[in-house]
Length: 251
Figure 1 (spheres, helix red, strand yellow):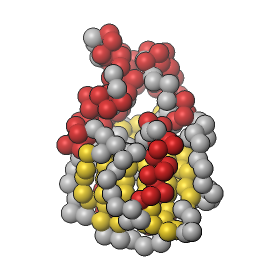
Figure 2 (tube, rainbow, N blue to C red; figure 1 turned 30 degrees about the vertical axis):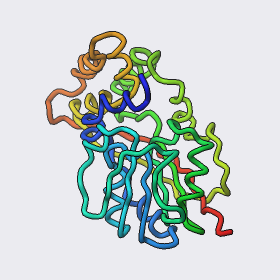
Figure 3 (cartoon, one colour; figure 1 turned 90 degrees about the vertical axis):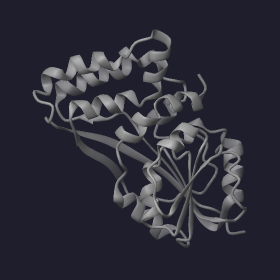
Figure 4 (cartoon, one colour; figure 1 turned 60 degrees about the vertical axis):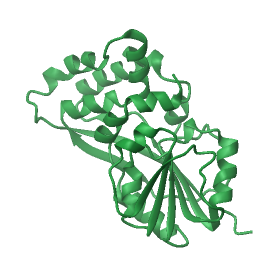
């Protein structure tokens, strides 16, 4: 399966079940951008970051290679969704004050993408890419079973690009002078149903299901069921958020 096919198959789960990023991150991005006229959210998926940017910028162009992901995106009056690869956005040169990549940089042809970033970014534009690693569940027993699912049940089906997520993108080239970004994290309180939906949005889950012909998340639901005594029982879930950011050259 290609990367586009992987995420086309889980587009609705991705839109409904991925965690939202903290307001503090978007406030920092807006403050550091040289202007708030246009932002380009690249590899936008179903618009998790695009919507927050739309609250802070006059216009957000949100692109993704998957038409299914774009079709699942929630509308916003200042967000314009386009189907386009990261490496060939179709945007005008020197047109964006902010370029963001949320949880997608590891899928790109980076040499070509970075050339596109330099082309589309205005002088002194801000470029930021971020990723979150495996979550931590507050209950130790639940966390142990969740980790077993993540590493053993579907572990062999993670694509090789997953190692870049686990490293916080430190294993990816980043040919810019980096800025210091304030610490960021994701925290939510989820039911078992929400955790299961999140697991169904993963690329490894899609690959497992395509290969084995069955839904592996049924195992996770059975393993965690005793730790969630009711459908509305919630548990704290935390993700470390790793952000790499730079200001593009004004030369």
